[in-house]
Length: 219
Ligand SMILES: C[S@@+](CC[C@H](N)C(=O)[O-])C[C@H]1O[C@@H](n2cnc3c(N)ncnc32)[C@H](O)[C@@H]1O
Image 1 (cartoon, rainbow, N blue to C red):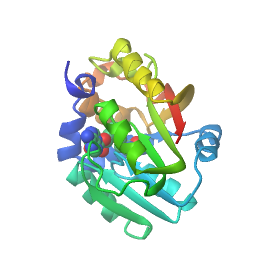
Image 2 (tube, protein in one colour):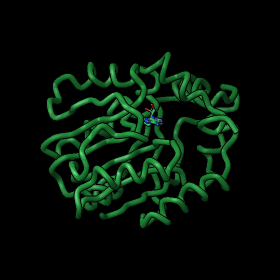
Image 3 (cartoon, rainbow, N blue to C red):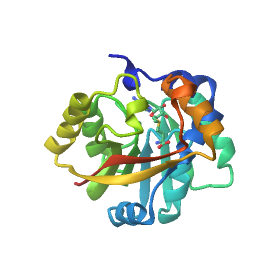
Image 4 (cartoon, rainbow, N blue to C red):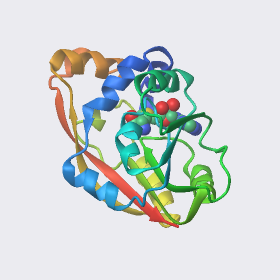
């Protein structure tokens, strides 16, 4: 099975950071979901793992004194650095999530939205750098819906097995709805056909209701 369920995400990170950013911004968290996420965050120091172009990092930074934004894609980090140049709370880290270059028990909260990598290794790293009493919030895939149907190799079995690994490490998982809102059909066709590889002709709407897994953990 290809990475990212057969999509072109990694090619897009490399060649079209601006296009990925539009995709990231199209994901809209409801007020209820934002409040739910915030209720799991304590403030202090945040580590955003797989931050991408930092749309969410920038939003959540207001609740923290300092933020580490970690990603292994140089082009996405470069894009974020320019885009959020005025946000002096954000410290960029070019690294794999499997080996976080931070000290043990050095961050209060960790956010991880749509990072897909070997979970067990990454969870152990997150637990290592998290302070006692600190919390992790993750947003990931939950079930097949109108949106994930566009992903050529989406596998419910694989998603269930990833979510079960998080449960095994003590995470609670609850379904939540997010909206994927593009500006219009033209934008949806352009971005989604590039990222998912789906034929533009098959994409005939620009708003999707997407069920995600909100996962949280306290150390
Ligand atoms: C779908 S994007 C999510 C970006 C951002 N969190 C958001 O919600 O828009 C996935 C991100 O994970 C990063 N990534 C994937 N595997 C990684 C790894 N092993 N270590 C660090 N970053 C990784 C990619 O470079 C990409 O920025």
